[in-house]
Image (cartoon, rainbow, N blue to C red):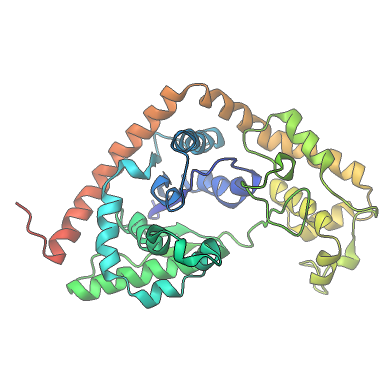
Length: 344
């Protein structure tokens, strides 16, 4: 094994193709080479108010998505964060290591809190320390990251380094990022200038992971386009490897669908552009729908089956929590001893 991976997904409902391409598909592939710990981060979810019944259902939904996508609960660990108390206990130690200046630089708090920052929860403000604890309580060596998480990984590295300095021992590893090349930016199917979102009120704006084959095909057929044939070589940069920004800005919906096709077929967007250059949208959408149904249809079907069997999903989470606790508790115990807690 090349190391230990920790990765988490918030249980906020309506997991979609962007979540699959951005994290879950990579999580499946990593199982072959790493010891993998995959967490439904329900402690992070309650930094903003959640309906309790919905939170429970959405926690099962994320676990079902992991399982339906191919994460093996026998070789990987799947659990929900609140069931392993070491996360919260190490987070308090890290709160006391973290400097206010570090938190004030975190851009995601500013984005999530918005203009009414005084009414944001303290949990939302300090959640980077909990994220660092999520990783370090397992002494994870690698974390898969996208562009929007690089700052949090640097924060985790800073916290681990300061803890090690304070206690005079190289106790926590300095975690390394796992970057999978250019991330697929999956945009809204009704507005290609907006990122695909779980919270968009229109279900037709996204392809949900639990959508069946008919729903997937219908959403692609209804996806917003423009009246022109698909772009060709003229949209590419001089080296032929990427899209000219001005071309993408002129036709965001076209390039969003081409990007999705490329991600599902493991082609670059430039290859997708060359493949469909000048084609009508009707032909392209038919092929995209076929590819999407082939890849995502079985996941949606299996997710629905698993959601109808909550006892099985809960059993996977329970087993995962026990295995995660067996790793985390000794690490937490040593960290507590290093900071001087009397252990009687």
